Amino acid sequence: MNGTFFPFLPFMIPFAGMLMVVIIVAIVFWFKAREKELQFHQDMRVREMDHQRKMKELELEVEKVKAQQGSQRVA
Image (cartoon, rainbow, N blue to C red; front, side, top):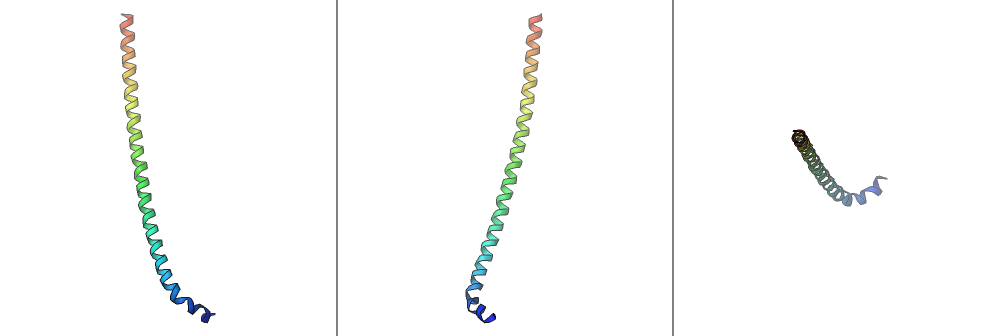
């Protein structure tokens, strides 16, 4: 069995080396893409929280204006 495997050895070693490089590059690319995705989700969450805060402020302003209009109509 060893005699039949050795003829392919000169082709297997460079192929394995290239495959290892491709796998390493793929892993690095995946980690960078995942990091960007997590950063994007974090930014979106910050924007969402900011938007919710602004909406609550606007709701309070609307309530104040309605209260002022209601008190002006009564007077």
